[in-house]
Length: 483
Ligand code: ADP
Image (cartoon, rainbow, N blue to C red; front, side, top):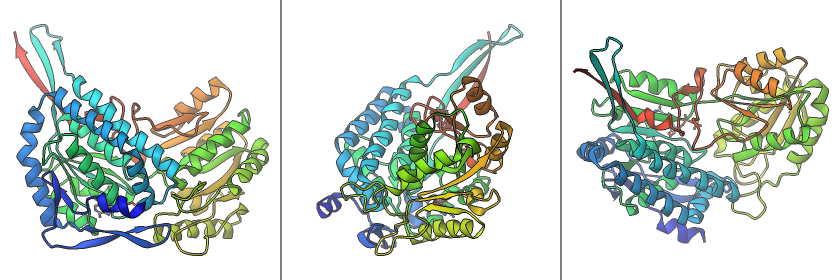
């Protein structure tokens, strides 16, 4: 029952360990993208609330940093257990506000909660080093300390996981954190804040500030010398603005920005496996993922076989509200996003691309778009250069390995890349030649809380997850000793 669940979710700002009203008293509506109807009114934070959250974070920062790592670890572990116990609530809430199919929301809860367990394990393994200086009479002591109060700005496409992969390492390292969730999907993060409180997280360590005007909350924080880091997942456009603003206080920054992932199928690939992989890499999360395969670059000798098989699978997908039985593709997040997907497809068609299936919006309420396959996509069309963020597969061909690598690298982005080949030699050679932070070899899903996630070029700075993820929240201190 949606109403019963919605009635239990906090809708205030989460400051000082509980829900509070915003100083200016505003609210904004959160919509169900499958219907366009209102789900809830959520408190609308402004800059004044942001400073209140930062005051609260600063009050407890030292104490949290001095809390025994084992204790921080236990709280993260308890949060993982509670999130897992409440998986159905989290999943349904996510489907309601974001639109993805319920099965995918359940997958995100498992994946997103795992960052809490993973970083509970990392919290007790923060290490420095001790060495003899090459001169022989000095000693080098290296210690790690938490960066300090952090601001996290998260997107709507993975409302839980994009928060936990930042909150997990920050808390494990001993940092406090203020989260500004995406305006389309603040409810999931508010429920997570409540789960953290139940897990025993001290008041002030984590705040959540939903806001209709993101910059009104983030700009005053970025200008405040007490803030020490900003971590962001979202568009490259906004990431660049945040990097600029971070210069004022020389903040540490982690930036997970846009992607334009190539999915390369070589002539020696297992074509059926490549089709399975493309379904995952392209259609998972309705294509609304920064790791989504944006360009399917397929050897001309297997292109028709691959395209026909992929088209058959995509044409058979069930589109509907995420909470309806059998739904595989939910709505896009909002009208603006749907308009941008439609414009890219229309532009590609005008440039000569061939529609194999789909190609238009679904009429009626909600922000649905038909699962689409485009073949013969001209290499210079916008859909090849820009992030689609929707259920649209755009296929281009190639003849030689060098051509495929040049096409794959021909973008300012460098987040994920996928290759399908049965040659180990080629897999190693091509994965080294690709300008991307992550490469999937014969698989369409690569994210793993235990592995470093991050991009190169304009896809970002830093890594999330893995043993690398916690370093983003630690400062290195060197003490020179004479013995
Ligand atoms: P998308 O285009 O996918 O919505 P955005 O980069 O616009 O991605 O949004 C990601 C996050 O960044 C959201 O939480 C959004 O509110 C926030 N955001 C958008 N614009 C700004 C801004 N100017 N300053 C700070 N945060 C912003």
